[in-house]
Length: 332
Ligand code: DGJ
Image (cartoon, rainbow, N blue to C red; front, side, top):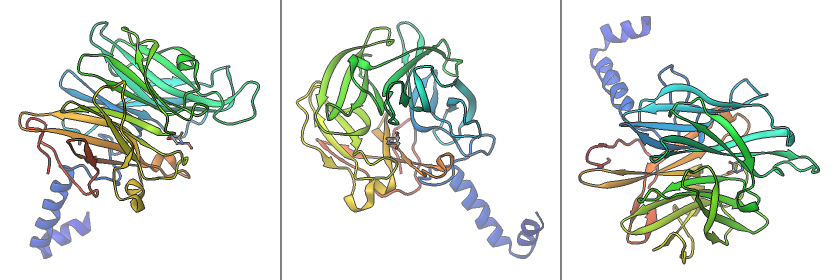
C-alpha cells in the first residue's frame, strides 16, 4: 500500500501507466498466465470444455486441490470469457468399487440436451481395475445428470463406450443437435467419434474410427468442413498437436498435419476443446488447451488462442494476450 501511495505521489506518470496496464490486462485472455476467478483463486478447470446456456458460458474441468480422497468436477460461469465466477464442485466422487487404487476423474465434458433440458456430464474414469496391476486399466467413461448447469450432478453409471477401452474423451455437438463423444482406444490404436443416444445418456453408434493414436480429441464444424484436433500420446508432456479435416463426420478424414511449428510442442500445450463463437461479422474458433505441470497439477495453465482456420487449413498462432468482441466475433 505504502509503495502504491509513494509511486502515486512521486511518479504520477508511472502510476497512470501502471493503472492503464492493469486495466488492459484485466480485459484480455492471457495464455499461460495464472487465471484468477472471482475469489482470486487460480481457476481449477483443467482438461475442460465450455457450453453456452442462457447467455452465459459455463466452463467445466478437473479440480486439483487438497482433497486427495475424492475427485471433483468444477464449474465456472462468465459472460465475457475473461472473468469467471466460481460455481463450485458440481460433482464429487469417491473411488468407485470397480477401481482398486489410483482413482482418476479426467476431462469432464457437459452436454446440454435441448429436448430433455438436462445437462449430461461425461468423464474419463480410471485407475487400477480389479484383476489388473496397471494404472489406467479401468479405462471407462462415467455419466452424470443434472437439471441445472451448475449442478449438482447425480452419478449414473460407468461403462466402456461401445465395449471399447476409453481414456481421453472429447465432446462435439453438431449444428443439428447430434452429440458425439470422442474417445481414445489404445488396443485399437486410434480414436472413435461415437454418436450419443437422443437423450445423450448412452454412447450409441460409431460415426468414425480414425486409426491414429491420439488424445485430447476435439472437433469443430466450420464453413462446411469438420476439423478434428488431437495430441500424440506422451503423458503429461506436450507434443506437436495435429489436425485433419472431413466433409462428413464419418469421413473420409484427411491425413494429419501439425497445428503449430513442431519444435514448439504446440507452445507447450495439449488440446482439450474447440469453442466456436459465431458473431455478426466473423466466426472465431478458440483452441482451448492445457499447459500441464505434472508435479503441481493445480498450477497447470491454460492456453486459449483463436485459430487461423479455413479452406481445410488450420494454424495455432504464437500465444499472446488477446480479446474478442462476442457480438461481432472479431478478435484482436
Ligand atoms: C495424457 C492425457 O491427455 C491427460 O488427460 C492425462 O490422462 C495424462 N495423459 C496422464 O498421464
